[in-house]
Image (tube, rainbow, N blue to C red; front, side):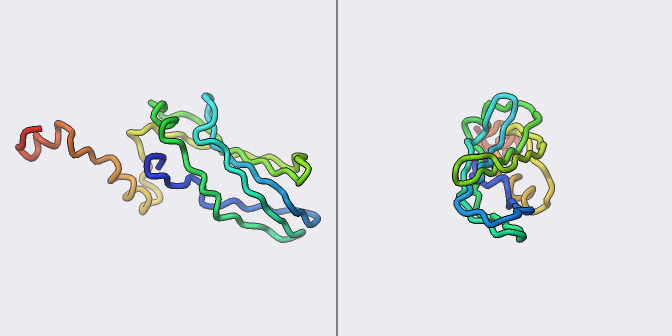
Length: 136
């Protein structure tokens, strides 16, 4: 996903805002024990009291160079912080995730699994030449 620049978050929902909030900043990042894996994304949002706000344009993608350092599956977190226009933290949240190495992929959801499978094809690998009978 990092190599193909596929965003790792489909959407974020902000709910439970008691009063209108203009100029808020949502900061989202994917981190592991070694630090950020893509650099944080910040979105400026205006929130309406009593109504959920769904943000679908985060475009939070992982840094391919940082992901090349991941050799085995490891625990990670998606962290989100919402601040008001003055910078005061209003709420923090996080979700535990599994960070996969470059040679791993998930088969679910099916469509994403099939798309990512193609990224693992290595046409210059010695196993391919053995299958085709052509010299490598």
